[in-house]
Length: 562
Image (cartoon, rainbow, N blue to C red; front, side, top):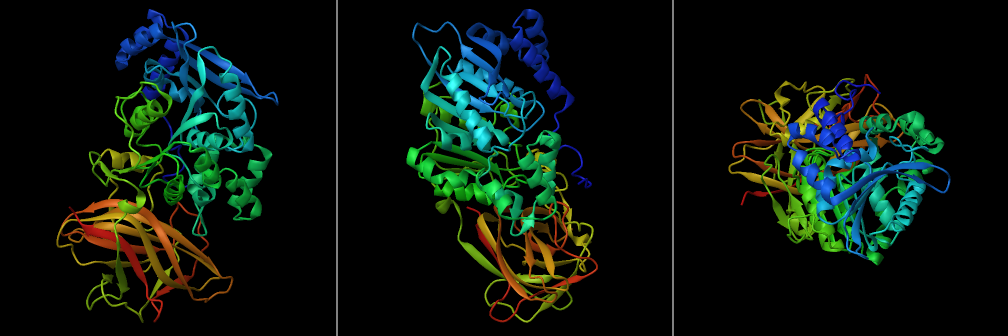
């Protein structure tokens, strides 16, 4: 798949970031003034000079039982008192060509906080040998073998081991903890809760994100099992084998183990996450009874923790340091206690910091808006409160190109722009109303907030046997017709018979968004988004309607801004 906006790697590092990591690696391997000095251009020379005084760093190659060699590195405090042991952080790599070296800038914080750190690249990734199994049973077994090796190292406390990981490393960490009770705490940034829900939402494949991940894994390095799954997903063969592949790789499948062991779990995700399912992370979090914390931030997959992974400050990594300090006894954090709650940023204020004790108290009550036909002289339908609106129909032509409404023009990068205060501007006034149906509220009389879970009901009658719609909720300026996206979701019906009428009710991604006075909420439903693999056939059309007894609506958790 090569689609405009999605063809380049969304995770590519800048030349400066690559040069900095190379310089850090050189200084760790040879902590001489000649190697540490060049770090001064990034203001890091003093940090790594101090690190070299208090810690020992060495690369490792750890042999697995089947002969696979895991590329790793160990950082451990030196000059320990006789018999003194350290809490230890194990860090499975995120999904990139650097493997575990991506975590190098975090080592000073962990080590100066008294931790030993073992970072490693999962089999098949970066310089580790073997094949990619996508956090499968073999990767979980590897994590246990790595812990077996770790506790043989002098100075490591076998009773104080935690796992930290970002993205692929987060999933690996969670699944490892479900298999190994020696893992006493987990912190996962940009984590997943249910792999199947991330691949297949409301009957619709997330093909753009899937292909981006396959490209990063490097298909030629994948196991035969995974290669078969790749071909099935590309071919829209979503059978029991695909479901089982995802099930065993889903932390939500291990809830009983986490709860029985009372494993403390910190999770972070993003409101506009395009790689893993946010609702699945929330659902996983809600069902945990162990000590837990959830952070949801502005942006997309991996955006918010990037500064922290680079050795700077970020909410996800600062929370991880506090989490491990509390549960393992180190001092990498700022000394504050972790919070066992839901923490959120609302769009688009990076300085916002909202907390609630749990998800149930976090979400606002839903307000129902009925989808009504357009008022006289208006081209768009209305979102109205009060009486359900029935009897209207709205045909939408199946598109082969995107309308102005899309989930994200670019994977990851659009989210980074959001975090920089530059959310993408959608020119919804320019959308061809033949290719999309649009409903709007009246202008808001006061500032409002959307906070929590959303649900849409609508009736479809496609001319083709199968059909896909994509729904977007926008924050629109009625004077300009320009908007920002709040949330979205696709839905695919597979009736197999042309002309079959189906009423569908489905959730949109949860959201936390503040609306200014005078703005309007705008619901857009179209049939094509390059982010998804749709089931539509062109030329054809889908008739949207609101029959008596199954009137169309959207439930929005909306309240005045307090």
